[in-house]
Length: 343
Image (cartoon, rainbow, N blue to C red; front, side, top):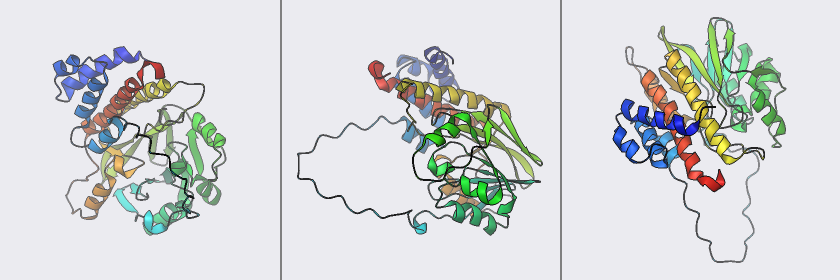
């Protein structure tokens, strides 16, 4: 791993020059300060990635004052089972010639169609996979029996929960990193775990028919998060989509690694995937949560799109690169917020 401090100084300068932020201002704050990294992240975010910037780079809220001691009240009864469908259901949508949105209101899943079958990227929860993915494909005129592969970005239940159903019912091969196969095996929650199948290595390619996805190990959000480059077509014109596989700082903390490890690893992974984004020329950003790629607004725009109108998901390589730069800079700010004692 690169030395974080020396790399951060270089990146802060590069961010200042490349994204319209005064280098003098950055260096005036100290190039390796929380403020400098937040400023670099804000410059990278621009006007197109503000929600993720605000979520990742904002300072943690101060701990609330302790309320006066009161007599405990019995806990309110919690409803059993999954939330009602009306709380999460979203209709499926065609986004590109060969890419379809199959997500819920707060969680995303995607289908990549090829000449030899379907690749599903993320599988939502076990309670929603039947409705959103199996039912969604059917509504779109696609046969879920053609699902050949299921790529799980990371082993949290909102992304892996439906994998076992697709594996059992359609014989789909499930792909995940070694670290996240292990994470899933250790998880004691009650969602159904898929059988261990294909282990993804960094830079591995998945080819099905006429389409090849390239997968990169980008640990941080989980120990083995996968980020992916996906070729897509819009009315026959080629584009490249990039999915950053895990965004939040709700790290899977393990006793053998200090808190600083997760921020450092996340930042290094962002550098790694940023290089892949640049090299591929990716001009489309997709995410596994709709608030991270502005999916609700873009899907609404697609529904009204007329022939000749631009595809709202095509945002350009500069914007996709700035997104990955931003999340890495927010991680560097998060590391410095830990303080020396915590690190």
